[in-house]
Amino acid sequence: MTSSRRKLVAGNWKMNGLTASMAELVEMCDANPSNCDVLVCPPFPLIGRFVGSAGNSHIEIGAQDCHTAESGAHTGDVSAALLKDVGASAVIVGHSERRADHGESSALIKAKAEAAHANGLTAIVCIGETEAQRDAGNAETLVTAQMRESLPSGATAANTVVAYEPVWAIGTGRTPTTEQIAAMHSALRAALVADLGDEGNGIRLLYGGSVKPNNAAEIFAIDDVDGGLIGGASLKAADFLGIVNAA
Ligand code: 13P
Image (tube, rainbow, N blue to C red; front, side, top):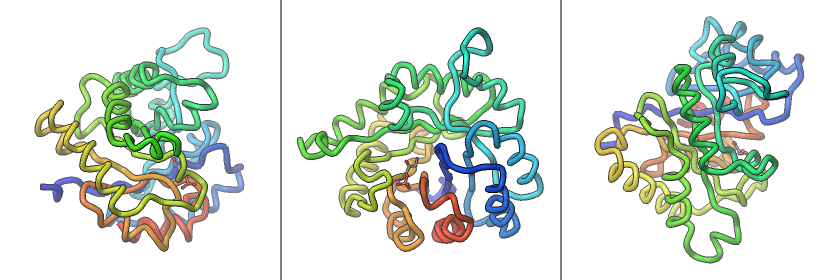
């Protein structure tokens, strides 16, 4: 049932990297892994250069956010149309750091994902609970509801990826147990299939939060985990390739 979903390992560089970081991307592209789909999402100013550098490899380049509008008076924002124009193939929307730092709501994230689709970009929609919410004992219910509020209309297996990232596991070195990840991904899959039928069965569900070369294989082997969204360990080619090779 799950075999049709090719794994995806996506690197989210967040606000890290300078032009010199191109050397890490070059090393990743030289290795040119083909066992799974690979995406690297650097900060906006590096996207064009990264697209050029990755051109002859299987590695695709994405962004970390987009605006809902096509263009206009939105100082400091970047449109999905421009991301597409400079060669990005995907955009992360709704990362918990944007929800927290910029007060982004699920309704806004849904609109951003729809703008991504309108411009031919894959939307990687992030969801996840805080530690307090997990401790309260209703993480699956809460995250499933967050996914339903954030998913764009017209979501398909080809244009949408969901990334489950427990906020308390991001950058902390702590990961949920295998059972906790399995329970969450199974609840999310059930909701996707209930809402979208067979299409929901094809949408990839990534896990993110302290994925490292030494725990990636165990996490990627969990049912309904279709790859990972990697933060810190995506900045160095050796670490990222170690994770990619585990997929
Ligand atoms: P870390 O891999 O650094 O925990 O970050 C995960 C993340 O937020 C990816 O989007």
